[in-house]
Length: 253
Image (cartoon, rainbow, N blue to C red; front, top):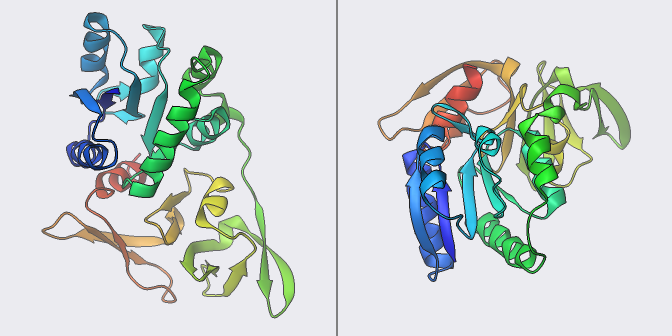
């Protein structure tokens, strides 16, 4: 299997290569590209790979721009943090996405979907054109209210009132004023699916934070970030070194 990686975060690209070597040692990484410009040059000079790993937001633009120049037919697995329209589209289409930082089980699942897709010829180009035009960004409707459980009762609360979600056997909802409830959803993936990626950020496997709940953040020598939240009912939130650049782009967009 010949693979091309388009990713501008060097640590993420290196991590992906190591994991591919362990999980699928027969994989040949043809190249690692860090920008739309270098990717355009590569596709002008080389045949398509068997599988393409691609970040959405690159240092010099959006990777979807490539589809304006090339009729790329190979399967694509996106690496992303909060571009929900891409996440949903590729779930439906059978190609997975990798949420940064990349999880080994997610990568295994993605490769299994690739193998299944390989039996069905090629990815529909209509999907790629849909993503190029970003229609979901224009028309996607996210939840405005959430039903939560409190003292054996179901209570509707506004999404805007929620400071954070965190996983601790069940999914807890903490509001800006410190109230704590239990969500009806079973996984953070389900919660993330109903939230606007502009307003909420998944800091890791166990927490999703509302931008309005963040008071400040600081980094350490290892490249990790630590968020201080406005509510005192949540501990300091840690963001990994790999995901720190993604968070900074999200908070400063």
